[in-house]
Image (tube, rainbow, N blue to C red; front, side, top):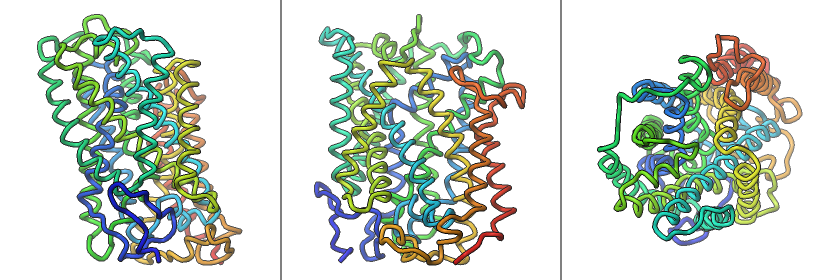
Length: 470
C-alpha cells in the first residue's frame, strides 16, 4: 500500500513519482517554506549578488535589480503551488495535464538540465569556499587536485542526504535556516569596517547601465524560476483537504523571496568590501574576512551547499525515474549525481567558471520560463476542472489513451507555445559569454525571460481551446 511508503527522518524514502494518496501526505506549508528558504541560503545566490557588483552596478543599482528580479521570478512560479497537492505527484509528471502524457518529457528534460546544472554550480561554489578557507587556516595549496577533493567532499554529502529523501531533506533545511541565517548576519558585522556603499563601480559588463542591470535582474529571477519543476517534489506531500492554495502559495512565496534576497544582499554587501577584487569572489571573501569569520564560512559552505544541492540531486533523481519507471529513485539519483559532478569538473577546469555559470543560468532561464508560464496558466484553468491522477500516471503504467493523451500523447498548442517562447528566449539572451542574434532588439536590454514568458503565454491562451483530446 502506498500509505506505508517510508517518509521518516533517517529512513530511505520508498516513494517515487507514483500517486501519493491523501492519507500518505504528512507535510505542511510551513515545511514547504522552510525547504525553499533553506535551499536558497547558499553560495550560489551569494555569488549572483556579487556578480552584479563585478558587472559594474553600484550597491543601490544592485538592490533594485535584485528586488525586481526576485519578485518577478517568485510571482511566476506561485500559481503552480497548488498543482502537487491536487495531482499527488511531482511537477514534471503533473505537467502531462498541460503538455500531454508524452509532452511531459519536455518538462523532465528541462528539470534534469536545471537540476544538474545548478547542482554543479552549488558544488563549485561550496567547494571553492572550503578550499580557500583551508588555504588560509591550514596552508593547503589551492591546486586543482585540492579543489577536486573539496568538490568531491561536498558532492558526497549532497548525494547521501538526497538518497534518504523527503523527510530527511525537510529536517535538514530546518537546521540550515537558523544556522546559516545567523552566520550570514554575523558576516555583516565581520565586513562592516571595510564596506563602502558609495564606492564607484567599474565599467558596465555589457557596455551600458540598462543592459547590465537587466542581465543581473534575469540572474536574480533565475533562482525562483529554476525551482519551477522542483516545487511539486514537496507540495505533492501536502494535503489539499487540510490546506488551501492560499496557505501553500504564501509559504512558498515567502520562502522563495526571502531565501533568495538575503544571500544575494550578502554577496553584494561583501563584494563592496573588497579592496582589490579578483575574478574569484569566494577567494576574495576568505582573504578579506577577519580570522574569526573563517570558520563560519566553512559552515556556510557545508550546510549551504547541502541545502541547495540536495534539492537539485533529489529532483533530478525523481525526474529520471519518471522517464525510466523500471529504475528505483535511489538508482536514478546516483546516476544523475554522477552526471552533475562530471559537468562540474568540465565547467570549472575546462571553461571559465564565471562566464559559464552566467551564460548557463540565463540560457536555462530562457527555456524554462515559457514552460513555467504554460504551467501557471494551465494551473489557473484547472482550478475549475481539476485533475485525473490516474490518467497522469499512464506513462509509468505503460498505458495509452486517457484524458491527457491529446494528439498521440502531445498537447500541440502547449508544446508550440513553449517552443516558440524558448526559441525567442535563447535568441534574445545577452551575456558576457553568449550574445543571441536578437540581443539588440531592445537596445541590449535582455528580454529573454519576460519575452519568452509573454510569447508562450499569449500563444497558449490563444490556442488552448484547439487542443484535441482523446
